[in-house]
Length: 296
Image (cartoon, rainbow, N blue to C red; front, side):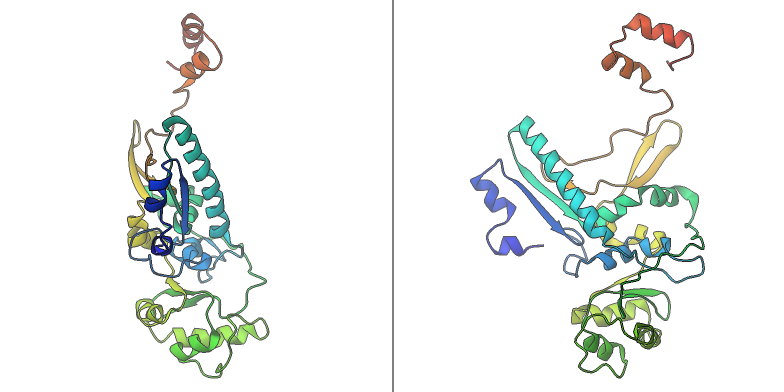
């Protein structure tokens, strides 16, 4: 965030020239907030979004997904965000800025599970079905610390080893190694156990090491970047009362999205659908209602 503005190619500058411009910006964490200057990378976003505690065996440490799930999902959101902005421009004549980020996109993917947690279902319990990452080398992955876990993404191994206090990796410039990866992981795991997650973040982030805390859903709920992105929202339901859930992942400057209605009750819109899309008149709808086929 901020690079295009520094180059004189930000949305505000270009929109002055062409008010119909649709401008899409994609980032790791969002355009504002406490994580805006951190590296935005798939594994790190998985960690913050609580994905690590949905994978692996029941007694395993948290694990990332073996594909770039945040990257791909954000790409989908870019497409539909731009299409929605095009539709809005057809109606209003004005363009707008469309913001997409990896964190919002991946949170939107587990809207069902996270919403269950937010509404009192408790933390999810993992099954014994493992999800392997067959093509990932060490030290990429999640590591146990003195009090929790930390996610480590792509970094020069020698630089990371020096900061963590792991000997024997001087001059190893690669970010991952496949040969002997089990030993590499064990070496780094021993190092990470010496400090808490926050202590490691305080050491590694200023050195431009790609890392992140590994949140469970309670951590996601409290995470300052999640709150900055307005990804936990509330709405009223006629029978359930106040419901909490995942917010709108794509942010629009001119036509911001919001949840404006609850999930429909059984048959709530039946008469409306019959009237508007099936061509039923009021007498026909009342006949169906009297017969109990359609709710009133």
